[in-house]
Image 1 (tube, rainbow, N blue to C red):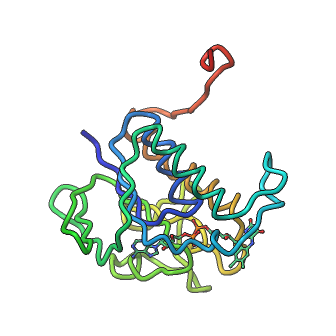
Image 2: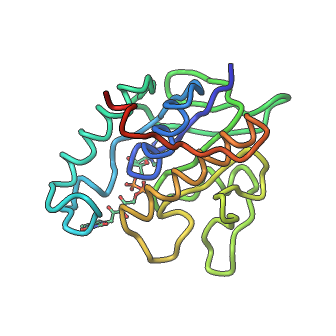
Length: 184
Ligand SMILES: Cc1cc2nc3c(=O)[nH]c(=O)nc-3n(C[C@H](O)[C@H](O)[C@H](O)COP(=O)(O)OP(=O)(O)OC[C@H]3O[C@@H](n4cnc5c(N)ncnc54)[C@H](O)[C@@H]3O)c2cc1C
């Protein structure tokens, strides 16, 4: 089974995890739980009038858990290319993954260790699908922008990365479209 390893459990990482798990890819989120959202209060996230940042993260974790995401509160100490995919090293051992979504906020060290390209502004260089120069490794959220740090942008990055992974897996452009009858 395809395994997506997401490093970071802020808006970027949880959004990526939501899309991949919802569409039946085995998804693990590794998170040190130091998201900036714990310091934020949202008035600027479309569809949410006013919400404490920690409450937002707790809701998001519950939502992704509902789709089967395996959330592990642990620090990732390294990500390396393996023969067939990637090895994610944590304090608790190693995990193999086919895709890695980096969503570690402004900490870009794992991307640097992997040899991903950086821009002149010293942020991780990604294409419009958030894929880095290392095929199969995505970078999302604060790590790909010098200053434009907003929760809704980070969540959008995560969604873009996930849709690209899903398109690659299905061999054609993929849309995660639901209709009102699906809620019945
Ligand atoms: C004081 C303050 C107020 C803010 N107010 C707003 C606001 O009102 N509206 C708004 O839109 N945005 C606001 N922001 C910005 C918003 O919080 C960020 O844009 C958003 O959190 C970025 O999301 P992210 O997923 O990229 O990174 P983060 O939310 O920072 O998440 C990164 C996660 O990765 C984890 N991590 C990092 N390295 C590792 C590792 N090696 N292993 C495992 N886990 C790791 C971290 O612990 C963290 O949980 C505010 C930020 C601050 C600091």
